[in-house]
Image (cartoon, rainbow over all chains, first blue to last red):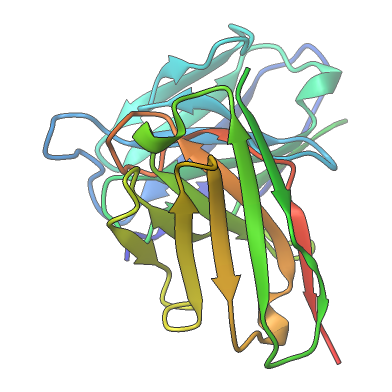
Length: 113
Length: 122
């Protein structure tokens, strides 16, 4: 199974400051069709997960442009350019290249300092 | 507007059974693979199972293989998860989720339901 790791596991950020979350996979996530199925999900307190970024760097409709995804192969990053109060929650990366099983990272909890 | 509404959760004793449902609307249900993802209290997300759009192909996490069965009724736009031999470690919120790409299975879930809580306890 592909193991997904994230760092840090917890992040306390001052409003308006940037934040960065790293996600690493135990194998390259490049799929046979040339795509890399690495997604980022946000889960606000008490809510369902919401997809933010798909295929490494594509932002979902309605996601603020302060969120961006990058990376390749086994190393990926989610960046928030200026953290806002509504960004509090847990962020998960997930791979869909080598399955079953689809695997999630352990999550990174973001709160406001 | 895509909507996914889960139901069927509740309290069940160890060894018991439960069937979850997920009513879908707002998209061509039969064209999209669907999955179940669970979250134990205070824990992270765990993929449980996926079924292809036509319902022919099914996939399971090792932790539930042989105990859970995923299925779908495309005429009713409804996804199911039949759970048998439930264990305390199956206690979780169960989310149904829609694959983003028609006819593909890549675990790319663009819409999620609100979840239904399953509690396995004596």
